[in-house]
Image (cartoon, rainbow, N blue to C red; front, side, top):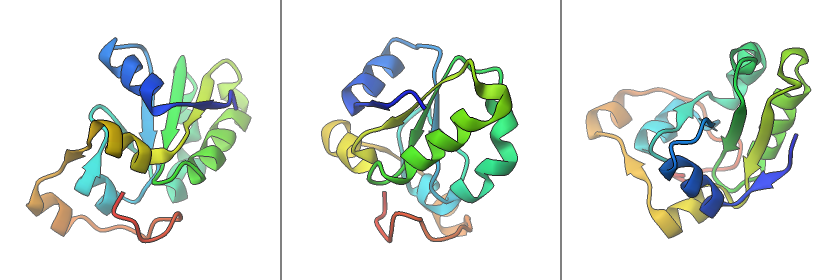
Length: 127
């Protein structure tokens, strides 16, 4: 893992259309409820089976509600055999910090209601 990145740095990367893959590790229901625009959902419980998807990426930033589980996710991705050349970081402070400063995109009500998912490893926060 290549350390942490601040929400300000993540925002700047997204605005610059940088070659970065922003991976939200919450369950699908929470992701559909609110998310950083441009992020994708790979729930933590699926990550170990999907880590090969990151092998061709240049940079991956993991995101979770408070910035704790995303550190675990970043370490998992970085430790995979095929991702040794990938820059993998965790967003410090998580969605809570990013959302307070920049806001989050909301999903439509139909999707949020119908999407299934497990409870977040970080607790019951809507982030």
